[in-house]
Image (cartoon, rainbow, N blue to C red; front, side, top):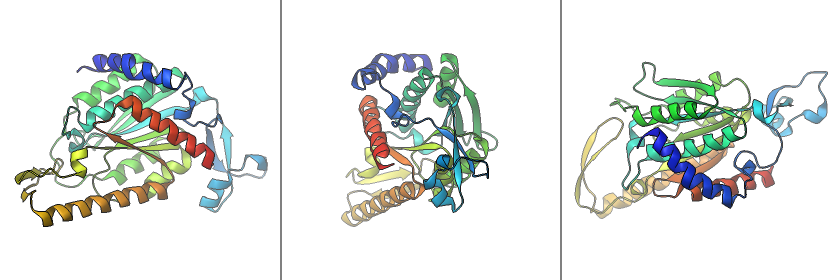
Length: 297
C-alpha cells in the first residue's frame, strides 16, 4: 500500500472514528491538562518563583523554571525504529505497518493543531545508522515521512540494536521542548533507561512499544527453525518441548518486567501497541492514559 493510500485509509477510518469518539477534543492525546508545553532551564535570580517546576527541581537537585510557549511553537518528534525486528508480524500486519499507522494518525492530529513534525529514524541502512527528517508542516511532508518508513529496507546486522545511542542522538538533536514519541519494539539491550529519562525530563515523552502476540506466546508447532530478525542467527528448536516452553515463558515475563521498570524509571507514558489491535481503539486507550497522567500531576 502506498503512503497516499494508507493516509487516505487512516483519514476515512481511524481519524473519522476518533473524531467522533473524542467529540473533537484531541487535547488529551497530547497533554490533557490544557497547560502549554514549556522550555525548561535553570533558575536565575530574576525569575518568578511561581514558574519553578518543583518535580524537575527535585529530580535534578537544582531549581528549574518553565518558559511557556504557544501551542503552534511546539514541534513533535517521532523517534522511529526501522531495524529488522520491526518487520515481524504473525497476522495481516507487521510492527512496521502498525508504526506507520500510529505516525500517520498522530501526525495528522498534531498538524491540525499547527504543530510541525520531524523524525529521527534508527535506520541501519544509513551510513551512520540514523536518518533525520527536520520538522515541517503539510500533507506532502507527512507523505514523504510515510514513504521513507514504507520503503526503507532493513539490512542484516551483526549485533543487537543499540537504542541507547539512538536516544542519545535525539537528546542532542532536539533543543527546544517538544512532544516526543519513541516508537519501537525495544528489542535489544536494556541500556537506554538513562537516555529515555533525559528525554522525559525535558520533553513531553511517550514510549509507544510495538509487539506481536506470537512473540509473547510461542506457537506449539514442534521442530521450528527460528531466525533472529536483526542478526539472522538461526536456531532449530522443539517448540513442543515443555521445558523449553516454560523457559521461554519465563524469559518473556522477565523482559516485560524489565521494560515496565525502565519506562517507570524514565517517568514517561508507555503505550502498548499490538499488531492485531484496531488503531482507533489503541488511540482511545492512549487518551485514557494521558488523562490519568493529568490526575497524577
